[in-house]
Amino acid sequence: MATPVRDGRPPFAALAGERLEKLFDALPSPCYLLDEGALRRNGEMMARLAQRTGCKLLLAQKAFSNYDLYPTLAPYLAGTEASGLYEARLGREELPDKEVHVFCGAYREDEFEPLLTYADHIVFNSPRQLAKFGPRAKRVGKSLGLRINPECSTQEGHAIYDPCAPGSRLGTTRSQWDAQMTPELVSLLDGLHFHTLCEQDSDALETTLQAVEAWFGDVLPRMSWLNFGGGHHITRPGYDLPRLEGCIRHAQERWGVEVYLEPGEAWALNAGYLRASVLDVLQNGETSIAILDASAACHMPDVLEMPYRPPLLGGGEPGEQPYTYRLGGPTCLAGDVIGDYSFSAPLEEGDSLLFGDMAIYTTCKNNTFNGMPLPAIWVRRENGGLEELVSFGYDDFKGRLGRRN
Ligand SMILES: *Cc1c(COP(=O)(O)O)cnc(C)c1O
Image 1 (cartoon, rainbow, N blue to C red):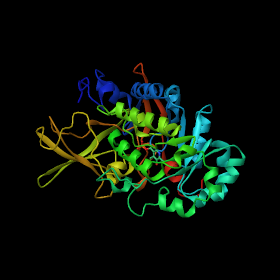
Image 2: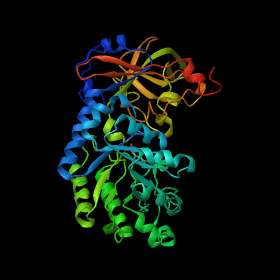
Image 3: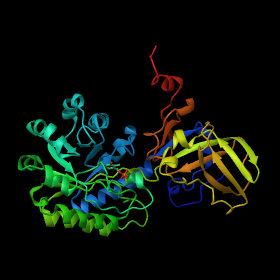
């Protein structure tokens, strides 16, 4: 692995030509490394979409909330999207001049007043929540929305990411709307919101938009905005941008609405790495195993939750190269396995590994299960310079379990 990076394809394209010894010598292990240049290239692509269509793009912070890098994305986004009070506050604090949008499955009484000090757009999940909180929010000038459920599943395989599954708690179906949306409630609304996609292309959006039109086409002309949610894999090579632009224009022209998109992944796709090291190598029957200082369960939880096998620089499919290993974390969880990968040479204790596409759903989702230390977070600046943003220690583990003294 001690060679310049030759693979010019995502997720390592931004490192092309970089000498890996330089990275590995400079960085602690394990360690997340955010790539400022890759973030900017994503941002530029998003900004071109906004310029061509007039849509507004928000950063869904639940995917990526390393706010030290918000200034890098700031020129390209209209605002941030939050899943609740804390993310709304973070968006307001770190990008004070941008819009703050919030959607939450249900708001709490005690957090709603503070939320009003941070958010511009507030999206409710149900007519009941709209009735409970909407009038108050409207009085102080907020723009109000209702999340709808267009009952149109476009994804297979990832059932936990399908808000259109039967019995879903997310979004208001047309029959719930008909039963509960009084004219007074409808008059509170400025917009509608749907979020049904996950890492999908614009054909799935097009299908969804047809369902939105079939169920809610009659109410949309009364709205001033329509939020298409997230899950648009806009910055993935091969994504069908013209079709997305067609969807945006269709909504703008047909209903006269302002269109918002609030992707998370797309902003930080392939814009980070997780550097790890081999702590031990062992053999169990036919299976060669390497235990790393990074854990799937703690440091890349979506590997187990989604699940998926993350890209690894120099790591092939099992059997593709001569030496195949199962890579796992040091925790006691039997399933703390990152995946099976093949290498051109045997792995040895102390070897460094670099996982790709580690900026999203990692630093904002990791945990200290098993008392695992949290990896430090570094950034690779556009000039190649490496900077530590934050590191963690024992206090970060202990401090969330009991008295802080
Ligand atoms: C998760 C989520 C997003 C962002 O989704 P990505 O898949 O990261 O693009 C946007 N809006 C809502 C309401 C979400 O729940």
